[in-house]
Length: 385
View 1 (cartoon, rainbow, N blue to C red):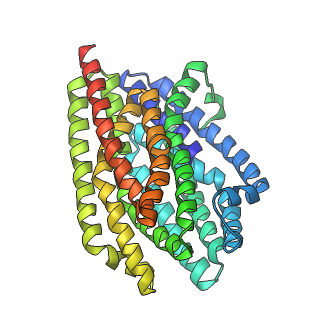
View 2 (view 1 turned 120 degrees about the vertical axis):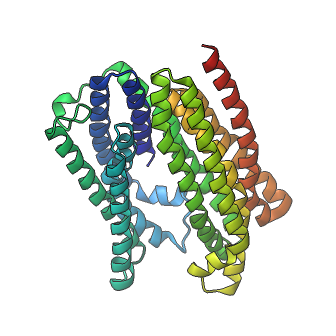
């Protein structure tokens, strides 16, 4: 996922700005470079992941009780690595070249197949976590095939922005540095999120398997507003980059302002829903009354950060779209390392498990304020140029 972010989000930003400058040929070469690089790196990760599966499982926080399930899951996830990378990367790249419908269909196709085969592999065939991972990888395989078919068709119709020919794989220093410098902060969002989750899981693990299970359900439910917020912010990013490349400052500010308002309102809706119906949501996935109550409580706490996500994600995506790699990277580091890990340690000492769970909304609130100040400073500098 992190590699997909490097070339997907990085390529998205570069291509959008190139199109704003009406440099279609450079945009086509950038898309081609990102596609083939993702394929190559995906194969490398497949091999490395299979070879180092045991230490990866241990670092992730797996213990003797769940190590077998972790192995089963990682094995098939790593086998699907090339497809996971290409599929997730092309989602971002397709948005930058105007393939919005194709991007959406590919997402829906991959996830629908994943859901269907989850039922087949887990419920009907009783393959457990191995079946879950296999269904995930197969879903990404199908979406990758769909995206490649779309690119081949567009190439044959003479689309100026799309080429699947290896002959157009012509990276240069400016292209690579542009993609990677913007993509790395996007990739670090995933990497550092994994790091912070590993730390969090280890602290929650102190309080037993029930706490881990309850948080696992709460976290999955909380991923709904998180992913919707990320989707909105990333969907708007190419438009911001296009306006910036075309020197349309007023339109860029309007897009940023309206998108942030919508993102915050989305978060408020989920905050209200989680506070009122957290226990009901947990009841969908759990049957033990103790776990339902605990997970419902966790859901309501995590929901407090939902409105803040609108600000943080929009500002982060804006900086990526503008090519402000350092600022985007700074937000990512502050969010997951500088603020979150110390907050988990401190709040665990003060309020035990409640403190560990409360770390996320507290950190997100502080970071939202910082993001507003950073954006105001950047916006003022852009207007003065």
